[in-house]
Amino acid sequence: MRKSKPPFVVTLAILSLFALLLAQGCSSDSRMEGEKTVEKEGKPATPSSGMATPTGAEKVTSLAITDLSTSKGISAERIKATKVEEVNWPDTSLGCPEPGMLYAQVITPGYRIILSDGDTEYEYHSDAIAHIVLCQKG
Image (cartoon, rainbow, N blue to C red; front, side, top):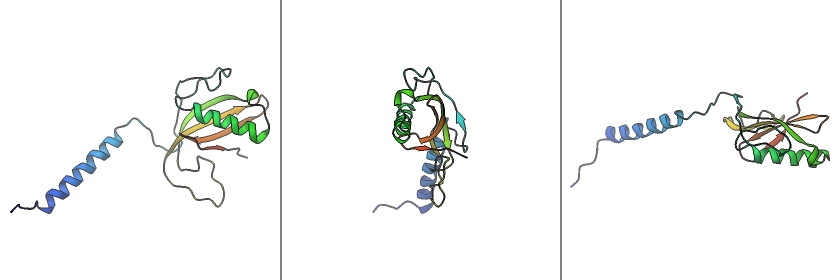
């Protein structure tokens, strides 16, 4: 007959595993401090924009250009990304909460994308994957 392990050994093993996972998550170089902005060099957002975007921001920048072109009736060729920066949003509203809406209170990595049609600047906020929001304040 096999002896069962005392409960404190099992508890200790579970706590050790939890501590290891916690330490591994904290050891990454990501910064999760509200709207902490980190600019990185990367590829141009559009071939003619002449500016660099953070690596991985090309997809959401392209989505923002397409959205602006469609919603405002502006030719996509006129729209240029003038600034794209990496941001950790404090929640899933991406810094643009709508009245009456509820948002998950989790740090949401993404981008602040400034587009221009030559006359007007438009500010888009995104997550890191594919959700974009036109965020015009004021």
